[in-house]
Length: 195
Image (cartoon, rainbow, N blue to C red):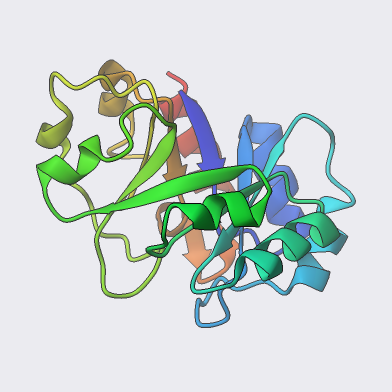
């Protein structure tokens, strides 16, 4: 199971996650988030990272032009769209994009069934709420294109390996404080997620 550590705000946390085996890092370009990182700061971090790590840019309520420009200027490799958009929005971004499904009910997890997507618990606010989805929704479901997010930590991630998720995404569950990771929590989470 692949692991994304989201809410990266500094190089130390980024390298800790990579050295522990993270497949992807998430950078939050949403100014209202306590995990916000400026494009300039993200670029400085990303420029010092080793190759073969996905750098994911998270956006809320931004234009396709801003998303594309930010990804290109920072060195991010994937954009993650956390707000409702029309279908043509993704084509306008013109950059590799991960859809996000903010699930209110079991039926929501079947949205975009033929695409890789991140499934998170619905919350009025955006991202990092620590709210958990009902894992029973995924029983008997092909989860091979689903990245599960929401309320995950080192204590509850290990049982998810049996569901066959493509990956898991964690932010608040491995933090010491907003925007600062706890190295021991990061290492433990990745070890348990990868079984």
